[in-house]
Length: 93
Image 1 (cartoon, rainbow, N blue to C red):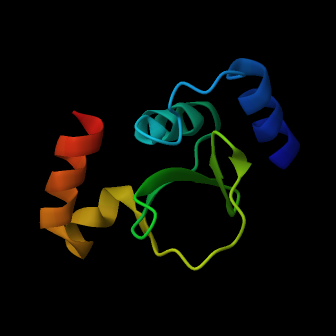
Image 2: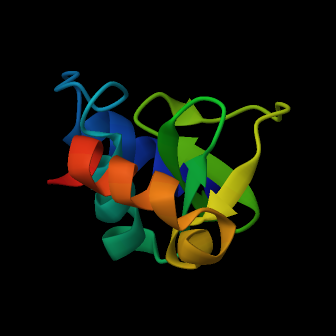
């Protein structure tokens, strides 16, 4: 699956349209729509990624293991509802 995801990213999205700095939520949604998986928000990086078969992806490809705290976006209200409102306001709307 990893090769399929990476091929999709490189073939369909050769140009950076702020996919990692401003449009990461929408790129995570694209990957989620195409491959399923789960959308996460990296709290420290302030960045959306999609988990597919145990691996995290964004426009750059597979995200290496790091120390960022990834929270499932659909569960973020339970983590920090005030922060979620700010993220929605600043990054999604």
